[in-house]
Image 1 (cartoon, protein in one colour):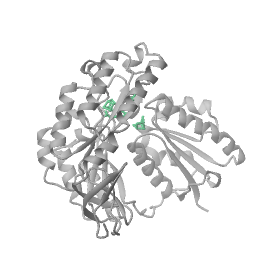
Image 2 (cartoon, helix red, strand yellow):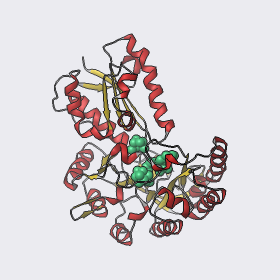
Image 3 (cartoon, rainbow, N blue to C red):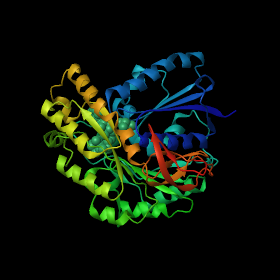
Length: 412
Ligand code: SAH
Ligand code: SF4
Ligand code: F3S
């Protein structure tokens, strides 16, 4: 009987990709996936620690597994990822029923970790899994920035770019297994460099792989968007016209204290250049950074007014142990709540407005179901007629309803 593994992932897309990679090592050792915890023989929890809340969710899930494990002490619990890296061996003391702790930095040796545990049979070549329509490809690990609020560099380590050859092989394997859309992943993904291969070169080369219809990437850092980058990708329609570009704050003073490496003005210039080249932009914003004044917060609100984002994910500042900003006095929970709710009010309508702006345009849509797909700029489009899943269809947009676009079809 194969070992049935329940996989629970917290955090960003990089963590989702890591979970897939870890699961491949498990499946090479005879494991199969299950979505039913009660029937599982093992649980893989891949954790996030970017904010206290994220870590809490993983720990509370782990706490609940105590009973699950008591029902059958043969059951296996693997705690992996960024929170595992932060808390390290202390975890096994606190949760003695944990079988394996494997921090984010150890992902490259996860196969050895499994073998050392003695809990799994020896590895065989796993059956090549059928890829989903959209597949992730990690191109770099770690981060060389030191944003003063952020724990990622300490739990993921410095940047390591994977060789371009390895990346192209990974993407090719996924395309052969059925993926039509490839998303390249890294914490500062557009800083990628391998010898003379730049990030733009890599995007272009991935887009040339047979079967690949679209290439996305996340998360880029504003400072690496240069005119050279835009020139290198402008004639390639397979590169998606959407960029998730975290700004964090609209105040140049706070940006400097966050050590982000750009001012409000530079960020807005980059946004404009991307928008002129046809890219739609979404973002992340942190409210209540320790030095953020009412005036700084007002600057964030005005940046949202100016930037024409399609979406903004807003977070309350969460102090992370060991980061420079964690030394600074915190705002009260009241201030954080207040600013978050004001900002959320402002960003609530962004998506609807962005969808309305698409009416009358022509969008290239990658079909995810026979009638529905996503445009290059990441809008959902209902085609009205059936098309093969995985095909790309050119659609004239007739109207928008909430966060759905409707294309013209013969019955209208
Ligand atoms: N590498 C990406 C962001 C990765 S972390 C970048 O630099 O843009 C994902 C998001 O979590 C960040 O964009 C930020 O908005 C948020 N975040 C990171 N640390 C945080 C903290 N200490 N408190 C609140 N939000 C945080
Ligand atoms: Fe964190 Fe900054 Fe690196 Fe992004 S660029 S992961 S926010 S340190
Ligand atoms: Fe979280 Fe680690 Fe990603 S801390 S946001 S899972 S890199």
